[in-house]
Image (cartoon, rainbow over all chains, first blue to last red; front, side):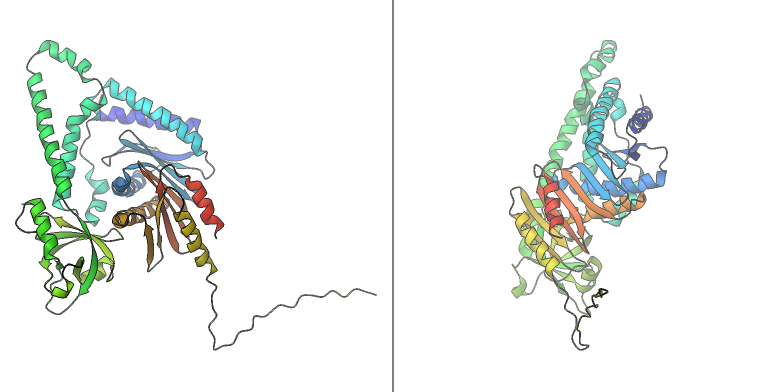
Length: 308
Length: 134
């Protein structure tokens, strides 16, 4: 069974739920990698894509609170309810007076059951396909992502591809017919693949845990000969990071502001002895304006690793 | 004898042209007081109150300031986008539940308030408290 079949099954589930619960105006299901797997026929694709892209950004940010479980947006003319089911998000637009308790009861029972049945029917269908480039690239491109983040994400998806067959069902039962025909050969690549996956997994947490970040206080500086592409950071901080990351020097840092804006800058050491060791980051005036930050505000700074 | 009805004369506020009218700041004071009360409740992690040019943050763990600020901004932005995409009109509140923490976000006048709490806290009570203060 392909992903298409999976999508058809979920689409008809959405339709059936809508029949028994007319307070649903629209709905769609989004996978955690950003792909809309099933959507309402009445809602246009650009609208769903726009909503999905916006939601995906929020879901990523929600990792700070341990991932997104539920979301309820109460607006003038209706509600939006998002529920996390397994590795998917059900996003539904409800009437203003919709009974959320009832809606939750329906979705929390029906969807996990359907997904479980589909998983048991065919495991390979759940292998995630690469994300749609059209729907989500604008959101990703609007904020620069460091190469380290990109590598982490690819590693994660690779790891998922290896992990999922183990997590989702009973692989032994399904492999039995293959094993009868070729009893020994399939075992070797299967064993080697998880080993590779394990090796990658071992590497990735190291990278994640060693990628340090620090909150620093903004200090502006300007001048005619000042370069606007570099910021000044304490030498101690840069040394500490280079030791942690086992690199000679930290050439670039990524700054994330209170409003979620990010930017990358080249690094220089704070030379003014009065400003050293104070937890400051000196940012050029022009860049402060672009990032909409003022002197004394806090920003999160982390080393940005180049794609070497 | 016919009873003469007395119409209340419109009380004209006495103003002089050289003195600016002083706006009452009771609402802001009430909100601050309510937030102070809410903050002391068990399970409340803190809050972020954003105005157009400033923001006040009170979180128990200062190392999370940026994370929570980014999250609250993303939640409001995402809520507005969804609301615009599906023509839902003005947003009144957002409840975002994570695996460990919950966030209640609502607009109060021109300010955007986000209260962070542990998952077991009843956000409806917090919402009522905040609405009661206005």
